[in-house]
Length: 220
Ligand code: ADP
Image (spheres, rainbow, N blue to C red):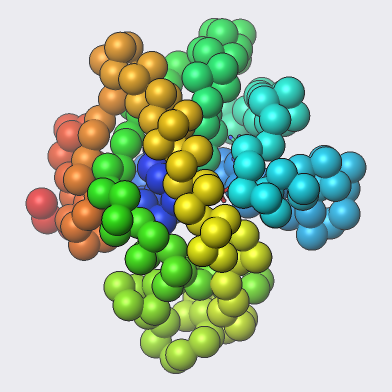
């Protein structure tokens, strides 16, 4: 199974992607994580992507499309992926659509986590990630057991450098202007599952599984 998870910044996209990956045995492909690790490792790609990410802009399609498509054609991704953060523009969605047949892949569902804009800003300002593996927490809705420490790997919780108020507003604007078009693209293909993302994590997950006709570990 190949899935796309679409959601604005702070919609819970990464959290739901992780739950789907675990439950369905998929590979998690997070374009944001790929860019962040490229920046951390000082690669050519990282250097090219950094200025865009620091400004809250999208990395150009010319860089992003090639990167993700090359990754997806590797054998380890052949048994199914959950795409988190890609495609984010109509051109990326079209490029993915054209490339998939050569890889003998199709997209089964595009899952859109719909959260009202005013809720997102509040969630993002309270978002922390762990230094070691970017496990995501929210001071209000999903706090760690020990303040400031990741439950999973014990590393320190920090705010992402691009999670500052001005940058967040800019990224949300781009989402509702551009990325929302990706939902129209998959709705036209009858592959879109739209879920109310303004609910507890377990309920959102249960709704997703129900819409896919699968049994959830969480009861809907
Ligand atoms: P968020 O959803 O909070 O913006 P991500 O981790 O998904 O966080 O992405 C971080 C940044 O990486 C984005 O702001 C953007 O600059 C870049 N990025 C990630 N995915 C893409 C993509 N598909 N196309 C262009 N830029 C991307």
